[in-house]
Length: 564
Image 1 (cartoon, rainbow, N blue to C red):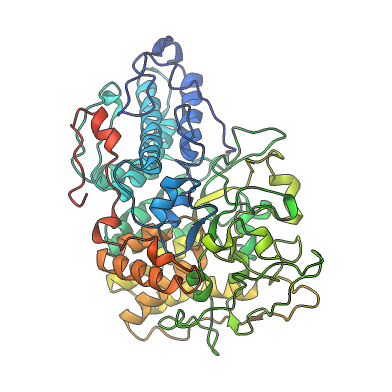
Image 2 (cartoon, rainbow, N blue to C red):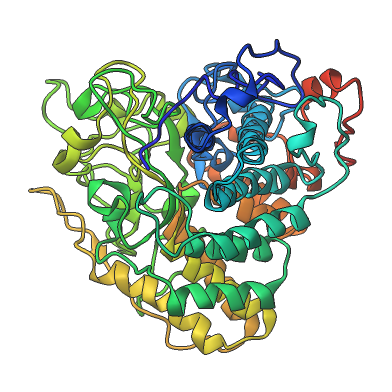
């Protein structure tokens, strides 16, 4: 379903016009009985779907609370904030691990997710007022959406409040713990009730609910249950990998076989409410003169795509030396036209590097040579690379470009879950549950073979060609090796898609702390002075603090996470 914003949907209800249970707002003026029809419930359900991007009337900024989770990546080893350090200061604090409980991004994310919970609850409550009409599918969709929002609340904050339809006027409900049982219950209801296919491709169905429940099991370390349901999706579901890896991030892959559940954004000639309003990732300038140059891939991420002579990743040694970069090198000579001489890294790399990371003298999504510094907003702050996956492509620019202004709202879909993720989650669940390592390796190899057989990024005339080498694994000799290989593959396949911080967090506090602190140390080879900007990662950073403003608004009913 193309994203449709119905800003009025909550405010029609007499019981609340608040989008967050931690806010106090005026009552609506239209009786809930006025919407006690199938059409009314359908309209409210569209309003609940519209909250997938977490945009609403009381948001601080369009890019603070986002469905694509881009700012979480900035807390990981995949992405630098980029831009001026003082621009979006709360995001700079998150990137450097020196944020506090009053961080604006964290509070807006909290409000956005609870707004989604409330909209889903209103659909459920409203459907209960409609008599003699079967609205079970609409209720199942609303419960799927409520589970989605509660899942994101729980994996970010752990201790959160369970808000139900009867709580819509209760702004002071305690946050007594994770909502895993409630999330499982909602997804199981969706599995039992939803059809296997919906007429509208953007709506939840039985198979997307199964895939999502598998993800919920994985986060709880219920590995056997996760393996069982995810393998059901793999063996019996309607999904398949696209032939071309890069199609997942443009029009060719929208609502196709790899899309399990997505936010289906839609652009138009203006600043569309249906476009992705969190879009700060485009180049600072570049071929389309876009804004704003945030969200720059790290040297650490670029290094991860190096491969050995057998076409396999360097699981333990990838970061001992850097892929050659152009940090500090001007784009052009004195005439302003002739590119400054640069030799592209000559070692072997995974082809997904150049679908994910924009780097000097490599093609930029069909627009030609990426010229480096001139297309980077502040290279000394964010490094020499630019994010590519959710950037415009020359071949489908008309289909996805938003308003031709500073803050564009493109129509590029965001995959909340895509089939490659399902394969990798199933592989992880098998490894961790004592299941078949051979099957886990097969799932990983399907993804690697897709990358191998994709059409590679074309070489720029006059530039030395990149050596793309990728092959499948021949064996997973033991659990430790398999675990390392699966985790590494998740990073290679899903980089800059909003997964990395969550993965590092769920792998455990020690893993998180060691990974991030090593990253800070090594990344200072490229970002000079980085060690003077960051604070050491600590165990508390695997969970977000309950926003101070939310605690205040609850009259201290909400309690801070113990780590904070």
